[in-house]
Length: 173
Image (cartoon, rainbow, N blue to C red; front, side, top):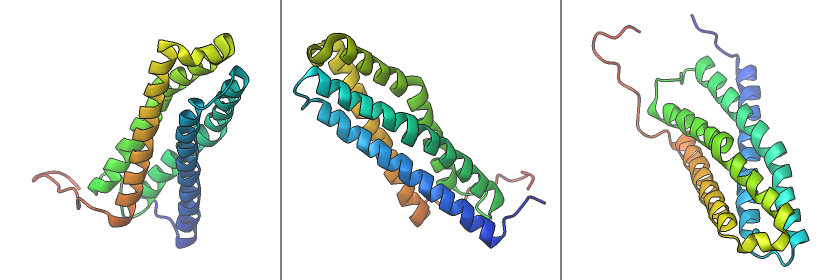
């Protein structure tokens, strides 16, 4: 029989999950706002300061809360009646969480590192470069996607749409 949480343990895990989700969502929303603010920079120092602030957010309020969200979400799925693959909404949340984390690891981190290094190397002139503009836009679109994904995940957490995953005939329990 699978491990089941007591009510107190479940509540502690839910609190950790909600705090990590809130930190991750809030920081990603801040990143989007700061990305938009990059266009309002008036000089190289201000541009670099905005990007450096985003770097601090990324290192402290995106990476660790994202991993904690995934970890606590998987534990809640495994150790409660929801299961990891019993309901479509749980599977959708797991897939979206993994996709947004992988998007950050394999793309956004590199894109952001380029913006920061370009601002350091070229100063305010970086904003006028085509490569800076393209990578900035990719970051904005990724931030919009991530925030939309988080909003959608919050929606399905409360409304639990799509129903239960039906077992195929002859499948073992």
